[in-house]
Length: 146
Image 1 (tube, rainbow, N blue to C red):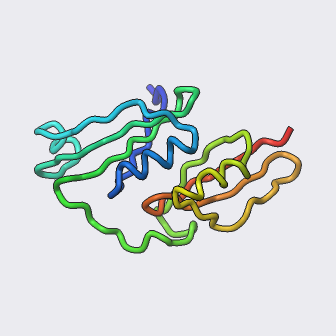
Image 2 (cartoon, rainbow, N blue to C red; image 1 turned 45 degrees about the horizontal axis):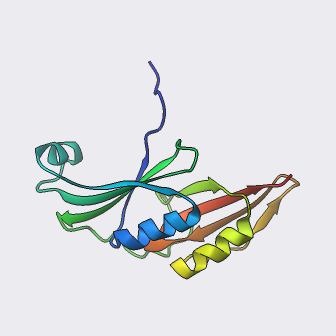
């Protein structure tokens, strides 16, 4: 049997409120917040003493979700610089389809978004860009051209 669907992408952050504000400004909807702790959390993660605040945000169509997590314990481990280029092993991005790429970038700038390059045109099909958001998270934006 194969997989049924993708559930969500999890991202660990230090500032949960800033991350939620960024993704809500992008157009995602806050589905809810919760605190996760206890034996099941320790067992699932392989960590001891897990206490974590999470926020689930979803795309307007309800099919895509991000689980943003702020660990209270154990302490988070800093993986190093957050401004690494896109081609570092293990570095990944989340891509979003948007109606107006320039407007989206402009709305995200006050939330700390910075373009990694510039908005590029792929043939007569798409406008595309990568930008760095809160916590160094790289997101891609794609506007389909009509």
